[in-house]
Amino acid sequence: MLIDKKMPENTYPDPLKKGVELYLNYLKKDSDLMMYIYKYKDVPEEELMLALLKKFKHYGLGDTQYFEIIKSLRQKH
Image 1: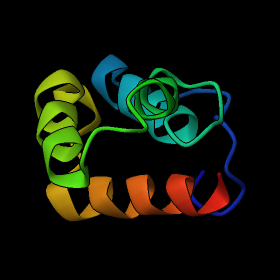
Image 2: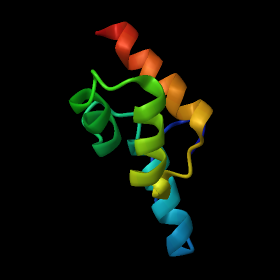
Image 3: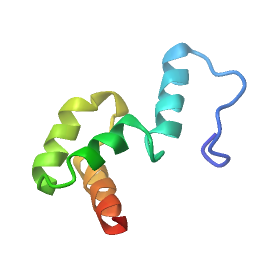
Image 4: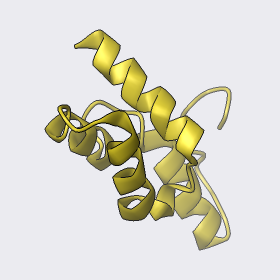
């Protein structure tokens, strides 16, 4: 899963399956996380990172990961 970046046929238990789905989808251009960052592209990084920590707890990402995602998206656009 980590190497191929695709969902295995059988994933148990269900919480693990949900975690794998989140991992495989959060960096896609049209994911809810990416769309939120695009929507608030003019918000300062620190403020946006704090909002992401609150709104997207289910991803289990930390401040450093959110900063990297924000910076990466802003450099591309």
